Length: 219
Ligand SMILES: C[S@@+](CC[C@H](N)C(=O)[O-])C[C@H]1O[C@@H](n2cnc3c(N)ncnc32)[C@H](O)[C@@H]1O
Image 1 (cartoon, rainbow, N blue to C red):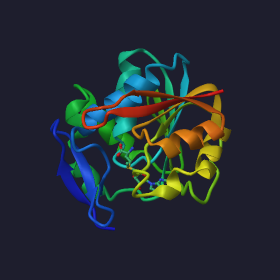
Image 2: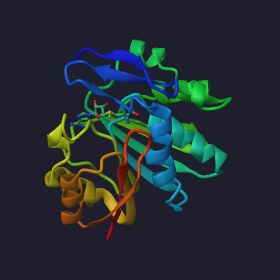
Image 3: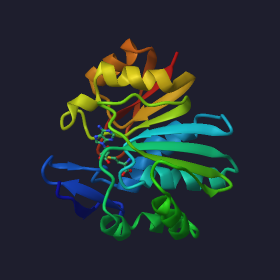
């Protein structure tokens, strides 16, 4: 599948997939969106330490990078597991400017995250351990238990098979009671699918360009 580097309104990069006519992040600001949806409304709400995070869609690694920086800045420890069906080519990753938004250690952490081997638990630093797994969520069932779920698949209109009750059943099976799922979507079908699998669903104000987003808590 063809992938193109694209710049969003906050100056941070995203990737565009012409075939799906879909971006990896909001065109109104990739870093802005990830910081709000996943860090502020997800990671920052969970007070577990160490915290175990599961991400659907590693993509550019932006959520992993921001989570690592957050953990360092807040003196917390995170175990971050991320699945990805289509890992990106190194040439595209090297062109991303996300580290410019990640403070003085940003470039080094960005490199460590992307140099981490797939299928292995890798220590990025004292605050952050990363496991990247090549994995197709439509075909396989993830293992482990997690406090926070970053649900960052392509949009329900572009990839409906990733937003079904069957997918959320798999996610529910790895989410600890009281665990938090965050996603940028606020679609009615997504809310209903989550509720049917034991999540209590809340709508929050979304990032620029999105009126609302979902945060769900596992009962
Ligand atoms: C919205 S993008 C992810 C953005 C990513 N979190 C980032 O910050 O760049 C959706 C991601 O889900 C991945 N994906 C698509 N289908 C998948 C599947 N069946 N299982 C796992 N990941 C999948 C895509 O390849 C893509 O990287």
